[in-house]
Length: 147
Image (cartoon, rainbow, N blue to C red; front, side, top):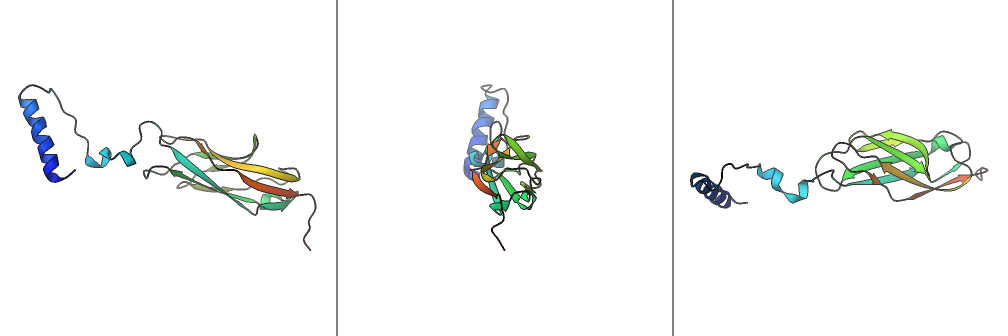
């Protein structure tokens, strides 16, 4: 709102107060009034998962690195809290976010040989809603095909 618009609104409010039409007025700072930066209730988040490498030999799953980034969908604040990296209902590892990011790796023998669908699930915390990443694939090989 421009300075002239702000003065006009304040003038109208002052006149209404002096005429007895209003008993009180609560004025919030302009920065808090922008709809794009304020949430009513927990702010929605977006969780992104990176899997590197996307294939591994059975028994060496600890070499896989799951990197997670959780961002608010509106540009305010940094999500904190926990993320679980899952294959189905099995929790492969947990991350405690630092500045909205974190990394973890599963234990060896955490997954059987085959193709696995992996997701990261942000559990939400203090003003930020839970969210789940898009699915990523991870292949666990029975035998090594590399020389």
